[in-house]
Image 1 (cartoon, helix red, strand yellow):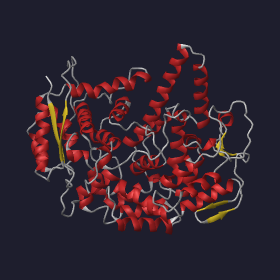
Image 2 (image 1 turned 180 degrees about the horizontal axis):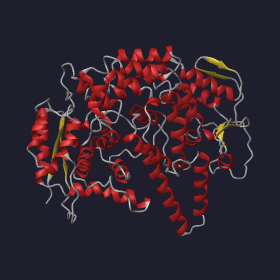
Image 3 (image 1 turned 90 degrees about the horizontal axis):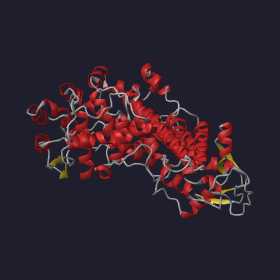
Image 4 (image 1 turned 30 degrees about the horizontal axis):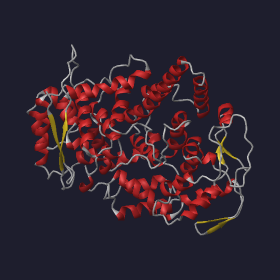
Length: 552
């Protein structure tokens, strides 16, 4: 018999008290914003260390050694650790084999693709969950979305791991100009935004053996447009369509040769035959013909432009502080960026030590993205993650597959992008599966990689199907308790699937007392009171599905 799950999400008011936050609340806040949430014991450790000292340590990740277990796990991911040349060679060979039209070749390509994708996901998720360098991992999430590349586009299926590893990760607290250049020259970006095809209109290029299918057919403005609109100046950065065209001309010849990538691992190449050698007028200046130096000069100008400073400051403050960032904070961050010649760490330090960042009004004021919600849920449980398949499947179901944003603006991090009835019901299903012990992340996978995500994707559905009226009543009680803390913004109802047969030996539910202790400063008194009146088997799921936990 179908039942309905009623859930109230409070977002008009923060669950935090507007009074000066206690040390435990401050610790929970920095762990929720500068990390992917607390693990058991983390809040106590941050309080003991002191919030300023913890922030300083996170801003200096080299002072935080990775565990030998995590290091060994990452080293074992042979497919994810391939160089971009090796990854491209494997992909090209698999594509060639599929052209044979044999079922065996197609199966081999699917199996290898699944193995690679799962390893890439494991590399990202294992770090996000277990690394002590939490701010570094949060910034990898932020900057990958800023310089987004969609993994589903042709050759980029093979390149996203190397792109994140080589063009994003080394620079997340370094100099923005370095990251801007690394992303602009990486084959993944050149392919994704088609700049590898862009040539001067008068160029007469010979068709060479082994050239990619999509041949250069003139000027392509895709990369130039996104470089200014998304990566640097921002949509209101004061440039014109003519500036887009002129920048595209300056970037002609920025390409890569797939054969050289496979044979010698050579990525970026400047091809002078493709370059537009005419004079350009760009952002109010005359650009004389200078080959590859024209593009390098453009990146220099864009990196130090005041509009870029404001754009980056706004986006960072929106991600870490509030969906509507405080203007005064944005201005101070932009000034720190310009004063320090595009160094990112001084801007981050201004933000994390600001009164706005620690303002009680901004604590718990953001709604977690699916990625933040899934990773923080697993961290809160303290469970060892031996199988990332269920987490990959959950992110797919929640609409945020890893490396799966098709548009160049990347995934949003604001409430408006993720708060809707269907998404909430799926989060509750995940919380129920994880809280009841049915998700299977702590059990080593036994199925072949290609089947893992598909099999794991059914875990949350089974758990949701097994929710009975008692669970719904408990969730409604939580919502009612939460509504006494602040006026509800919206009430949502979502159907629960019909019950399915329970397994012969159901897994044990999580230790809810340990989970509540890990999240103690986050949970309201009313929520704790409701939890105390519910069966032990339901409490962990209700904690992870509570309004307070979905906010951060």
